[in-house]
Length: 345
Ligand code: NAD
Ligand code: UD1
Image: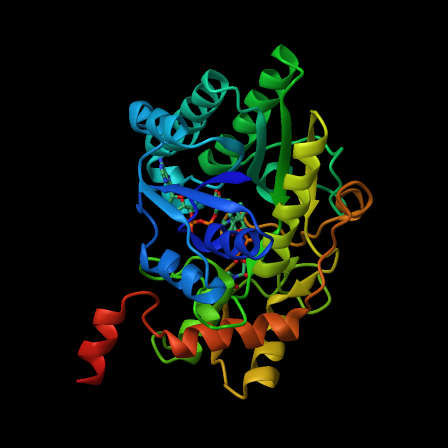
């Protein structure tokens, strides 16, 4: 069975391709490499010993996308492709709306044209915005607080409307909490451009000596140690959640949202401590001002995914720290091996 993976060269996409290939699916990747490297896909092949097809196609190029569907009998689509940096989305909202929303509209139109009506979509816990209580469950009212979040919210609504117009569709809206970690092989992992915005790549880059010290954004939240609490989910657990969601959409129609999280919250200081303990590296840090827009606590109620998809996260924070460090220490410059050769010369 052939699965089209948009954004398959990216962080979560590449890990999902590994699990898809291991499970016996044929994989066709569409990615314009605007935030990824083709090397990631070569490493997916290396890990699995299996081949996949790659098309350097932009979802905004509907004609090129149609050609992929013409050449392949696609059974379902896992749709990762999108821009994801919150801060950048505030300064470049039109770019985010155009890429994420127009890209998804093109994809849905082409899917409809070719009679493909099964989709797993990458949404985000960001659609919960600021809530008064944790854990977050799928029935809470949604509210995005920035253009990136609004693209996710709008796409969820667009996909609901697509289903209402044609009940043959089957769509899973996966709301990820905080994806972290890397594949056990150390061959694929997160490779952010420039200085990382997110906590985990920042910690690993401090550990490898690329950054001097971590700023902990806020020490006065009402949490057990004053620092922000999040639900960190291992990317391989997350990838497996996509396989469970894929089986679900292949067998049933409807549109459903699922939280993919662990149900446990850890603070920034918990994560630093766990990283130091499991890797033996010291992470220098200082507590600074809160980051505007941040919330104190976010973690999932993952019971719906367990009940309906038969999925739950299995890996804990020690494994997350170990695997992230293996990836970062083996690939200090991410997929940019040329840079490594220059450094070691
Ligand atoms: P990523 O940037 O590593 O992967 C996204 C991929 O999509 C990249 O390879 C990029 O080149 C590609 N892409 C973007 N726009 C495209 C277009 N128009 N046409 C073709 N390819 C395009 O990001 P990721 O962390 O793997 O995230 C995957 C998805 O999950 C995104 O939609 C993101 O918003 C969502 N998500 C991510 C997180 C997270 O923390 N990583 C959390 C919640 C949701
Ligand atoms: C970010 C995104 C959110 C997305 C989520 C999952 C922002 C503002 N929000 O949220 O839209 O859904 O990732 O990918 O980018 N922290 C530090 N120092 C740092 C970096 C982070 O102390 O250098 C803290 C943050 O204040 C937070 C925690 O670490 O308490 C996690 O931060 P981050 O990894 O950026 O994730 P989110 O804030 O959950």
